[in-house]
Length: 298
Image (cartoon, rainbow, N blue to C red; front, side, top):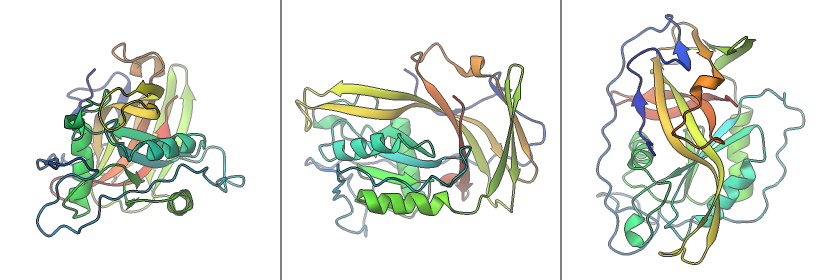
């Protein structure tokens, strides 16, 4: 299965950016090599000067408190929670469970990225991709961090915590849920799909990427080796592909024409789902920054 993130070289048949796009593309990020530690653990080897203890995680499997969503509009754009996880990490199943609970809230879009740097511990993650490791590493570079670890949750591309409990995680999510919108979204049904128009509500600053995410809603995995040997783990919203559709400078509205029958790809299972991430990119290397908004396409 191809999990590479790539830039379309031509107008995409599924989602076509209108000619209102302005500005040159920024240079792509170049992620440094991640060195896995010699001994089993949760944290990739830090560089010089990195703080100690950043790899200890204590995700709780307790039930999440009910989110305060009764007064919110039903069409609210979801808060994106990205989990970097691994089937070979014994600390990860509680975080995977927490992500599964978050998927019950329609105003949260949880996404699970499986990294490959724990595969050497005896179990190769069936969903892992070097591209997802590179995404996590790019987040670390953007934040000035020298190491990566699992599990790690990042909310709307900006806020993270080493070991959030349910109450702390919901507080972070709610801070984004009630934050002022940076982009206005207008969706209009058409005969063959829908039109989506993104309108900047203020100066967006850096370039903004429009990324199509393909993900599997749920899978059960029986792990027969490695640290999670003998466990069956439920994984939710497993990302299988990221595709960069366009880089937008935010100076003018961006119109996208979405044709649902064309975004479905025969290379992926029939239950594959799709979403758009509208994410600010920072610096000359175009490292991932704040996710300004997100849209479910199905």
